[in-house]
Image 1: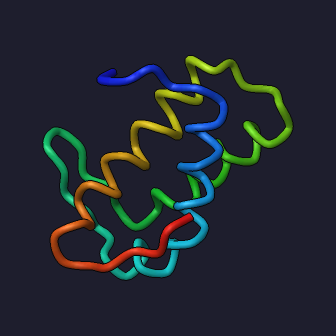
Image 2: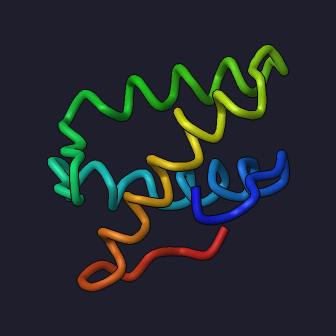
Length: 86
């Protein structure tokens, strides 16, 4: 990864996701280099967020399954869709 991921950065990414969920759903499928986020992706990431919220996730797993995908989504949305700050 290109930065050191912390619990706080994961929490910020999750807050951003909830603030922008509607815009994300409207844009799906979202194509990023190497990954296509299809319509069912929100169910998957929300399941991961739920586990993180129960404090049952290792930081390294949350970085891979929550933080990185949300960063990719945020980057893909920047050019054409204004997003809300978390």
